[in-house]
View 1: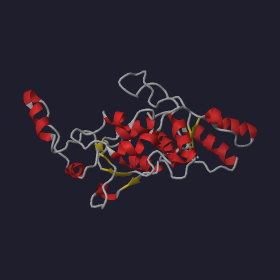
View 2: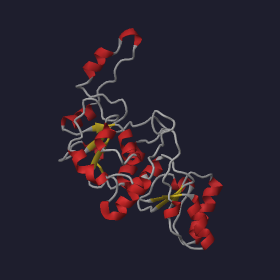
View 3: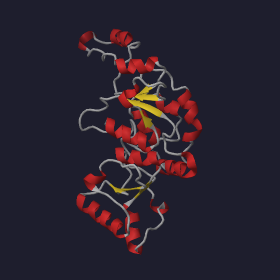
View 4: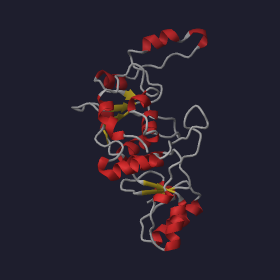
Length: 262
Protein backbone atom coordinates (compact mmCIF):
# COMPACT_ATOMS: atom_id res chain seq x y z
CA UNK A 1 0.00 0.00 0.00
CA UNK A 2 1.12 3.57 -0.64
CA UNK A 3 0.41 6.61 1.53
CA UNK A 4 0.47 10.06 -0.05
CA UNK A 5 -0.62 13.65 0.34
CA UNK A 6 0.31 13.88 4.04
CA UNK A 7 2.97 15.71 6.01
CA UNK A 8 5.89 13.44 6.83
CA UNK A 9 4.91 12.85 10.47
CA UNK A 10 1.31 12.01 9.56
CA UNK A 11 2.43 9.75 6.72
CA UNK A 12 4.81 7.92 9.05
CA UNK A 13 2.04 7.38 11.60
CA UNK A 14 -0.29 6.09 8.90
CA UNK A 15 2.35 3.68 7.59
CA UNK A 16 3.10 2.48 11.12
CA UNK A 17 -0.58 1.74 11.74
CA UNK A 18 -0.80 -0.35 8.58
CA UNK A 19 2.41 -2.21 9.30
CA UNK A 20 1.17 -3.16 12.76
CA UNK A 21 -1.64 -4.98 10.95
CA UNK A 22 0.87 -6.91 8.87
CA UNK A 23 0.46 -4.79 5.76
CA UNK A 24 3.34 -3.81 3.49
CA UNK A 25 3.09 -0.02 3.32
CA UNK A 26 5.28 2.87 2.23
CA UNK A 27 5.00 6.62 2.61
CA UNK A 28 7.01 9.75 2.01
CA UNK A 29 9.87 9.54 -0.49
CA UNK A 30 9.57 5.75 -0.66
CA UNK A 31 6.04 6.12 -2.06
CA UNK A 32 6.70 9.14 -4.26
CA UNK A 33 6.35 7.08 -7.45
CA UNK A 34 3.82 4.37 -8.17
CA UNK A 35 5.05 0.80 -7.79
CA UNK A 36 3.70 -2.17 -9.66
CA UNK A 37 1.66 -4.47 -7.41
CA UNK A 38 0.37 -1.69 -5.15
CA UNK A 39 -3.25 -2.45 -4.24
CA UNK A 40 -4.23 0.64 -2.22
CA UNK A 41 -3.46 4.34 -2.27
CA UNK A 42 -4.26 6.15 0.97
CA UNK A 43 -4.53 9.93 0.83
CA UNK A 44 -6.52 12.60 2.67
CA UNK A 45 -8.44 13.75 -0.39
CA UNK A 46 -8.75 12.91 -4.06
CA UNK A 47 -6.30 14.95 -6.14
CA UNK A 48 -5.22 14.63 -9.76
CA UNK A 49 -1.61 13.68 -9.10
CA UNK A 50 0.55 11.29 -11.11
CA UNK A 51 0.33 8.75 -8.29
CA UNK A 52 -3.46 8.96 -8.10
CA UNK A 53 -3.74 8.57 -11.87
CA UNK A 54 -1.49 5.49 -11.75
CA UNK A 55 -3.64 4.00 -8.99
CA UNK A 56 -6.77 4.60 -11.06
CA UNK A 57 -5.15 3.10 -14.16
CA UNK A 58 -4.25 -0.02 -12.18
CA UNK A 59 -7.74 -0.36 -10.71
CA UNK A 60 -6.40 -0.01 -7.18
CA UNK A 61 -8.39 1.17 -4.18
CA UNK A 62 -8.06 4.92 -3.54
CA UNK A 63 -9.16 5.42 0.05
CA UNK A 64 -9.12 8.17 2.63
CA UNK A 65 -7.12 8.18 5.83
CA UNK A 66 -10.37 7.36 7.62
CA UNK A 67 -9.90 3.79 6.40
CA UNK A 68 -6.58 3.52 8.23
CA UNK A 69 -8.19 4.96 11.36
CA UNK A 70 -11.01 2.41 11.16
CA UNK A 71 -8.54 -0.44 10.67
CA UNK A 72 -6.46 0.72 13.62
CA UNK A 73 -9.53 1.03 15.85
CA UNK A 74 -10.68 -2.48 15.03
CA UNK A 75 -7.16 -3.94 15.05
CA UNK A 76 -7.91 -5.51 11.66
CA UNK A 77 -8.39 -4.56 8.04
CA UNK A 78 -11.95 -3.40 7.45
CA UNK A 79 -13.97 -2.97 4.26
CA UNK A 80 -12.80 -0.18 2.00
CA UNK A 81 -16.06 0.75 0.24
CA UNK A 82 -17.32 3.40 2.64
CA UNK A 83 -13.87 5.02 2.72
CA UNK A 84 -13.31 5.07 -1.05
CA UNK A 85 -12.50 8.54 -2.39
CA UNK A 86 -14.94 9.17 -5.23
CA UNK A 87 -15.31 12.96 -5.20
CA UNK A 88 -12.35 15.19 -6.08
CA UNK A 89 -11.72 18.74 -5.02
CA UNK A 90 -13.07 21.30 -7.47
CA UNK A 91 -10.72 23.29 -9.64
CA UNK A 92 -7.94 22.52 -12.13
CA UNK A 93 -10.31 20.31 -14.09
CA UNK A 94 -11.02 22.68 -16.92
CA UNK A 95 -11.65 26.32 -17.78
CA UNK A 96 -14.09 26.70 -14.89
CA UNK A 97 -12.77 26.58 -11.34
CA UNK A 98 -15.93 24.67 -10.39
CA UNK A 99 -14.97 21.70 -12.59
CA UNK A 100 -13.73 18.72 -10.57
CA UNK A 101 -10.19 17.65 -11.46
CA UNK A 102 -11.46 14.05 -11.48
CA UNK A 103 -15.03 13.20 -12.41
CA UNK A 104 -17.20 11.81 -9.59
CA UNK A 105 -16.83 8.04 -9.13
CA UNK A 106 -14.04 7.77 -11.72
CA UNK A 107 -11.88 5.93 -9.17
CA UNK A 108 -14.67 3.42 -8.57
CA UNK A 109 -15.21 2.96 -12.31
CA UNK A 110 -11.62 1.85 -12.95
CA UNK A 111 -11.47 -0.30 -9.80
CA UNK A 112 -14.66 -2.14 -10.70
CA UNK A 113 -13.53 -2.55 -14.29
CA UNK A 114 -10.31 -4.23 -13.17
CA UNK A 115 -12.06 -6.33 -10.51
CA UNK A 116 -14.56 -7.49 -13.13
CA UNK A 117 -11.84 -8.89 -15.35
CA UNK A 118 -11.55 -5.93 -17.70
CA UNK A 119 -7.92 -5.34 -16.79
CA UNK A 120 -6.26 -2.01 -16.27
CA UNK A 121 -7.28 1.16 -18.06
CA UNK A 122 -4.77 0.60 -20.90
CA UNK A 123 -4.77 -3.19 -21.10
CA UNK A 124 -3.93 -4.48 -24.57
CA UNK A 125 -2.74 -1.11 -25.92
CA UNK A 126 0.75 -0.16 -27.11
CA UNK A 127 2.18 3.34 -26.76
CA UNK A 128 5.08 5.43 -27.95
CA UNK A 129 6.00 8.14 -25.43
CA UNK A 130 8.35 10.76 -26.81
CA UNK A 131 10.77 12.67 -24.54
CA UNK A 132 10.41 16.32 -23.64
CA UNK A 133 6.92 16.10 -22.11
CA UNK A 134 7.25 18.80 -19.46
CA UNK A 135 9.72 21.38 -18.15
CA UNK A 136 11.94 20.17 -15.28
CA UNK A 137 9.86 19.74 -12.13
CA UNK A 138 6.51 19.81 -13.95
CA UNK A 139 4.10 16.87 -13.79
CA UNK A 140 3.29 14.58 -15.37
CA UNK A 141 6.76 14.14 -16.84
CA UNK A 142 7.70 11.32 -19.18
CA UNK A 143 8.56 8.92 -16.33
CA UNK A 144 5.16 9.61 -14.76
CA UNK A 145 3.38 8.90 -18.05
CA UNK A 146 5.24 5.63 -18.53
CA UNK A 147 4.35 4.52 -15.00
CA UNK A 148 0.69 5.49 -15.48
CA UNK A 149 0.42 3.62 -18.78
CA UNK A 150 2.22 0.54 -17.47
CA UNK A 151 0.18 0.57 -14.25
CA UNK A 152 -2.91 0.31 -16.48
CA UNK A 153 -1.53 -2.65 -18.40
CA UNK A 154 -0.28 -0.68 -21.40
CA UNK A 155 2.95 -1.51 -23.18
CA UNK A 156 5.37 1.40 -23.69
CA UNK A 157 7.66 0.77 -26.64
CA UNK A 158 11.37 1.49 -26.36
CA UNK A 159 12.94 4.32 -28.37
CA UNK A 160 9.57 5.98 -28.91
CA UNK A 161 8.38 3.09 -31.04
CA UNK A 162 11.07 3.54 -33.69
CA UNK A 163 11.94 0.45 -35.69
CA UNK A 164 9.18 -1.80 -34.33
CA UNK A 165 7.40 -4.19 -36.68
CA UNK A 166 3.91 -3.09 -35.68
CA UNK A 167 3.20 0.58 -34.95
CA UNK A 168 1.82 1.58 -31.54
CA UNK A 169 -1.85 2.32 -31.02
CA UNK A 170 -1.12 5.86 -29.83
CA UNK A 171 1.85 8.22 -29.59
CA UNK A 172 2.09 10.63 -26.68
CA UNK A 173 3.99 13.71 -27.82
CA UNK A 174 5.07 16.92 -26.06
CA UNK A 175 2.57 19.79 -25.90
CA UNK A 176 3.10 22.18 -28.78
CA UNK A 177 4.24 19.45 -31.17
CA UNK A 178 3.82 20.45 -34.81
CA UNK A 179 3.62 17.99 -37.69
CA UNK A 180 5.33 18.88 -40.97
CA UNK A 181 2.03 18.89 -42.87
CA UNK A 182 0.73 21.62 -40.55
CA UNK A 183 3.88 23.73 -40.27
CA UNK A 184 3.42 25.80 -43.49
CA UNK A 185 -0.15 26.74 -42.55
CA UNK A 186 0.88 27.71 -39.05
CA UNK A 187 3.80 29.71 -40.38
CA UNK A 188 1.51 31.72 -42.67
CA UNK A 189 -0.83 32.47 -39.79
CA UNK A 190 1.87 33.74 -37.46
CA UNK A 191 5.08 35.67 -37.49
CA UNK A 192 3.76 39.15 -38.38
CA UNK A 193 3.76 42.04 -35.94
CA UNK A 194 6.33 40.44 -33.69
CA UNK A 195 4.39 37.22 -33.22
CA UNK A 196 6.54 34.25 -32.20
CA UNK A 197 7.44 31.83 -34.99
CA UNK A 198 5.68 28.50 -35.22
CA UNK A 199 7.42 25.54 -33.58
CA UNK A 200 9.63 23.43 -35.82
CA UNK A 201 8.14 20.08 -36.88
CA UNK A 202 9.22 17.07 -34.82
CA UNK A 203 10.61 14.34 -37.11
CA UNK A 204 9.84 11.62 -34.55
CA UNK A 205 6.17 12.61 -34.43
CA UNK A 206 6.14 12.96 -38.21
CA UNK A 207 7.41 9.39 -38.63
CA UNK A 208 4.74 8.04 -36.31
CA UNK A 209 1.98 10.05 -38.00
CA UNK A 210 3.18 8.85 -41.40
CA UNK A 211 2.77 5.27 -40.13
CA UNK A 212 -0.85 6.05 -39.29
CA UNK A 213 -0.31 6.45 -35.53
CA UNK A 214 -2.53 9.05 -33.82
CA UNK A 215 -0.48 11.62 -31.91
CA UNK A 216 -1.89 13.20 -28.75
CA UNK A 217 -0.53 15.31 -25.91
CA UNK A 218 -0.28 14.03 -22.30
CA UNK A 219 -3.61 15.62 -21.37
CA UNK A 220 -5.35 12.91 -23.38
CA UNK A 221 -4.09 10.22 -20.98
CA UNK A 222 -4.96 12.34 -17.93
CA UNK A 223 -8.51 12.96 -19.16
CA UNK A 224 -8.89 9.32 -20.28
CA UNK A 225 -8.60 8.37 -16.61
CA UNK A 226 -10.24 11.39 -15.01
CA UNK A 227 -13.32 11.38 -17.28
CA UNK A 228 -14.30 7.78 -18.08
CA UNK A 229 -17.85 8.79 -19.03
CA UNK A 230 -16.48 10.56 -22.12
CA UNK A 231 -15.66 8.66 -25.29
CA UNK A 232 -12.06 8.55 -26.46
CA UNK A 233 -13.08 10.58 -29.53
CA UNK A 234 -14.54 13.34 -27.35
CA UNK A 235 -11.43 13.49 -25.19
CA UNK A 236 -9.19 13.64 -28.23
CA UNK A 237 -10.69 16.89 -29.49
CA UNK A 238 -8.59 18.98 -27.17
CA UNK A 239 -5.47 16.83 -27.22
CA UNK A 240 -4.99 15.37 -30.71
CA UNK A 241 -2.16 17.10 -32.57
CA UNK A 242 -3.44 19.04 -35.62
CA UNK A 243 -2.88 16.99 -38.75
CA UNK A 244 -2.56 13.76 -36.80
CA UNK A 245 -4.25 10.58 -38.04
CA UNK A 246 -7.64 10.13 -36.40
CA UNK A 247 -8.04 7.73 -33.51
CA UNK A 248 -9.97 5.27 -35.67
CA UNK A 249 -9.25 1.73 -34.47
CA UNK A 250 -8.27 2.96 -31.01
CA UNK A 251 -11.77 4.39 -30.53
CA UNK A 252 -13.37 1.17 -31.75
CA UNK A 253 -11.16 -0.95 -29.52
CA UNK A 254 -11.85 1.06 -26.38
CA UNK A 255 -15.45 2.17 -26.86
CA UNK A 256 -16.90 -0.71 -24.86
CA UNK A 257 -13.95 -1.29 -22.55
CA UNK A 258 -13.87 2.21 -21.12
CA UNK A 259 -17.60 2.03 -20.40
CA UNK A 260 -19.36 4.64 -18.34
CA UNK A 261 -18.75 5.78 -14.79
CA UNK A 262 -21.69 4.95 -12.62
